[in-house]
Length: 307
Image (cartoon, rainbow, N blue to C red; front, side, top):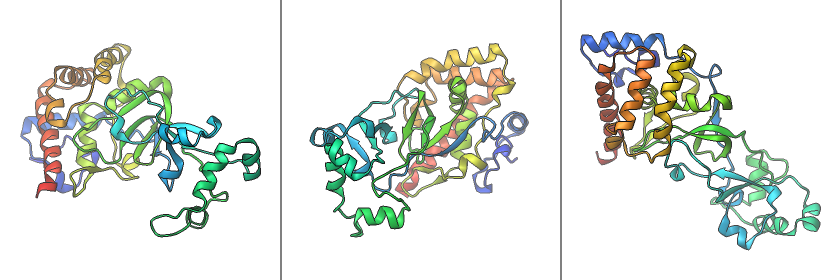
């Protein structure tokens, strides 16, 4: 029989998995609770598109040669590679360069910043186009060196997850580079929403709906979170359920996340997912089969690059 567990996710036909009658009955339960969180629970978008990272994302080493004034620097999460845990503390090693001052003001008051801008004013991109020309003619800027950043986010995930599948969150909103999906929710709810996004239910929705790339990574396109993402409805939880979920989630959120083939057998992960399913009234007997479905699906995706 066709697996109805993720009918609510509107999966493409070729991603369905056949399951027995008991599992199909369990699957119907999942249709009642999960909802599309867009607008109801959070809003989402992408991190900031710099149009040229070498100019707009500056590291500590560069700042030694070009001591750009701090008022023009915003700490940014440059890449998902630096994310090791679900609860992420931003290391301030990279900065977005955001400056909208006029050049004559910069030259007289902020000479180091002026020097940085002038250094790049004669450089060209890979197609041989001068950067000022590219930023104005192709990217629609009025002031070629001014970047308007996207709003910061408190939950985020790589747009191309590979062997580690998880959502991260920050205790305070942070600015992101464009290679990350930016999820913005009420700060008082961020921990609970991050917990539910990291449940086996939401991770399966992500894996089964994402598009597999040739190199084995998952591709979460711009419309994924608006049209396909599902999350267990936090409004259905009572105070006791929320407390129990967060009690299991907090230790998990602090440790290093493992690759998919090891992560979902770890005791704290299993205990967390059992607590989530139990809080929503689901039969815990389905959990091992959900893990197997996720692991098998990720494994098939990862192995694509070897075929």
